[in-house]
Length: 349
View (cartoon, rainbow, N blue to C red):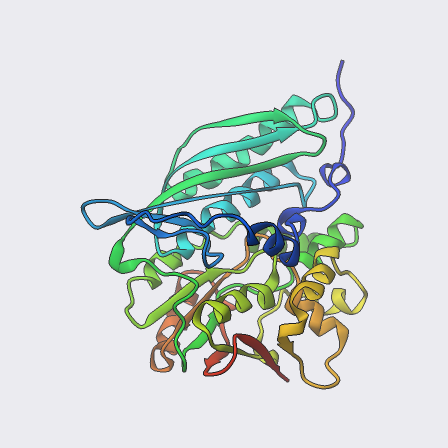
């Protein structure tokens, strides 16, 4: 018997990177966990909340390993697969590497979603992997209460090109490659309040592969890279600040946004994850007096398949911006700088 169509988002309590555990809970869970251990070749483990694990091979090549998966933030199954795959592969680019292969991670509520719908999710993920030039070489699937899809991804880079989230330097400028507002758009999608043009913008940004990260990592004046996902610009910026022991100063007026992000935020389209993010790390963020709530929500907005946050020396900033824009990241912009000071964030009006 044919199954009636069902909205994927109606089967999920949250969607995309907005369904991540909030930062405070995650830090508590990991606080008593053992560090990765004294493995000489483990260059990046879980000590700095970096984007992926990195293992050094004998010939100076680094092996990069990561995994990412989540519940739907859109109802189109093919788009869901594309977005989830793009997001998972991004971690490799954020380390300065290039992906090699992927394994699919699939959880579906059997009996609630038609097999044809699940097949479209898988096709969407495969299409993104083909664009990245890698195969989906296997995977694993289970019956779950909510739909889940993502990838485990293996990549590589030369050791000299490895970029961590802990290596920003005092005086560095910070460049963001994609506009913010994905979580706000997701909230509008959930309530069927985003028009066709907005949805097109949403899919375009969330399916744009962060390939430019591998190219930027070859520049010795690029010091740190991370991707902005579920913890928002403030959360992932704070990870950079903690790793480097510096203050991240955000120029609030220079942040690139999706076209309708401000209007939707003013109308109250905010995710629960945005509130959880602020509750988790707001105490380490200094905001300008009188900052309206909608602007704060922009800063904590969870990004699914967001852009890269790149730190570099000031003289290289214009060249890095030009390189990003030439690669298709037309809204890439300088969003702040790193100063000597406590590991915290200060937002300037």
